[in-house]
Image 1 (cartoon, one colour):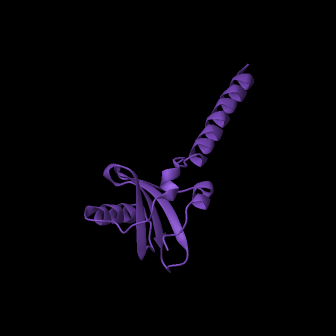
Image 2 (cartoon, one colour):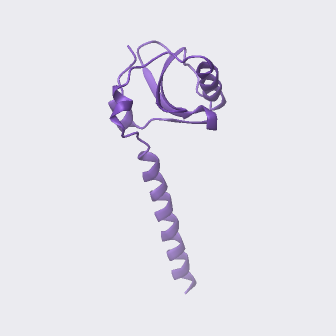
Length: 113
């Protein structure tokens, strides 16, 4: 009986882990306006807020970055160290949240230049 309970608990945990992995991989902004908007240089306090958020999350090597404001307070960020290779992030500076975009979203974004 204990063996079956452990098996069932293991299956529940495995299902939860797989569900979390799938939800993390679906972090893509579907709104096409996000991909069609032009990149711009951060303005006013955006530069400071986004820069602090990136540093606080260990994101280094962004000698240059550009933004697209998706909704008020939500940004897509293009970051480069060499002007050729770009990394993309989605951030909410007012909530201190940032994550790297997944490959699907990255494939839809074009570099700022």
